Image 1 (tube, rainbow, N blue to C red):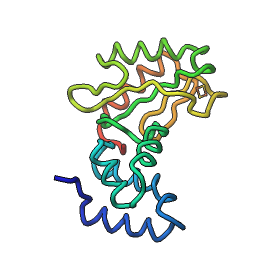
Image 2: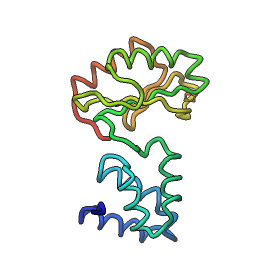
Image 3: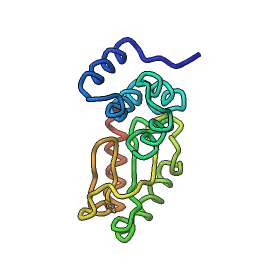
Image 4: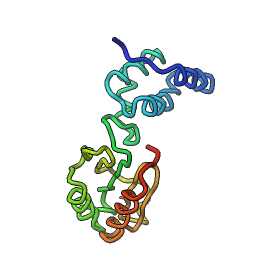
Length: 164
Ligand code: FES
């Protein structure tokens, strides 16, 4: 059976389509809508977006795989992205990544068993002047150090919630 949007998501999709000059231009917001609806972009969710927008599946797949904020697999309540590109790497992001893997007991691409955290290594987050940079959901954490990583994890653990 094909995946389908809820009636609320379907209404929002129609609003989206009215705002763009053509359906191709609405691919990215439609993918964001699918992430909010289903939690991540499974192959079925990407197929749904292609069908509803009447655009090629290759366009949807190519767009989804280009943007790291469009999750292609399940993520935790707090999705932690560690920039591993040059400026951050030179300022110790690999050590921070290893610290996070150790503290959370997961590797890149994994989710903690309680569903609270997921971890991912990403390319430049476009804040190189504040390297090393970690992104948690939509928030940037800059000039990170091992002590700041520990404090951040403590803060997140003590305040469950957060918007994906
Ligand atoms: S290299 Fe990390 S933000 Fe650019």
